[in-house]
Length: 154
Image (cartoon, rainbow, N blue to C red; front, top):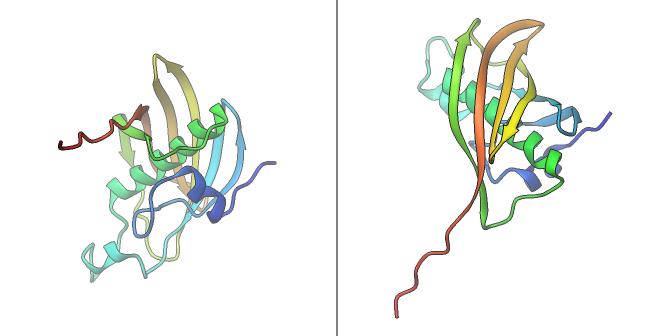
């Protein structure tokens, strides 16, 4: 069983508070799958406005947490850590379905599998569960790209 703590995760993802949405990797298998968690707390910034009377985690952030888990899996699978000249872009989503609200106190258990990788595009099957209940599922596509150096004025 291979796991990663938050400090190890930060070596693979450029995201930081408040947008780092993976707290721990429970297990991963290179080229195949990853299982990660996101602890959802009332202290999350987005709960101030979504919604103050009935806090619910926005669906787009659940998808983002899955995409971050997928990016972790991609980097772990190729045995490479990102540097300042590379970034993983989220390039597509298919079949997103939201099955249950996610509220403060819930723990999202994210399960992501690689469906295929071709010509620099990775396709993943992703789902997140809360207490064995499906919260969200989708197929995600990501790509790794080099960041062009900014032009310098002469």
